Length: 105
Image 1 (cartoon, rainbow, N blue to C red):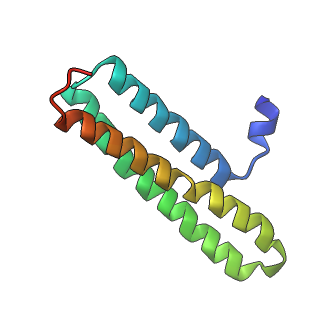
Image 2: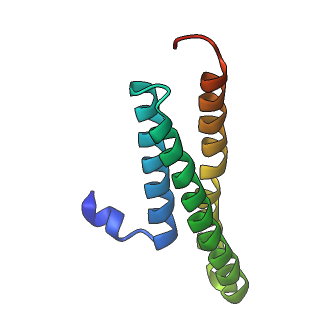
């Protein structure tokens, strides 16, 4: 498994790591609800992840333009990077609704 992960393109590695850290923070929020420090860490991480994944996506667009023979592979990598966006929006929506609601859960 480790060798397989190391052979993936850097964009796929970064997307997977971003997803993993985001999911870990999301799960931790429900273990430690209403933790202001965790919310600040999560928002900071989100900004860093958006920036990093955005730069990677721009690089993939550049590669897609410059390498027409590798477009299919680049498109798959771009879709993997872009898949983090709806997941992050869903996590953000759930946490903000949890913060706003008066329910203890």
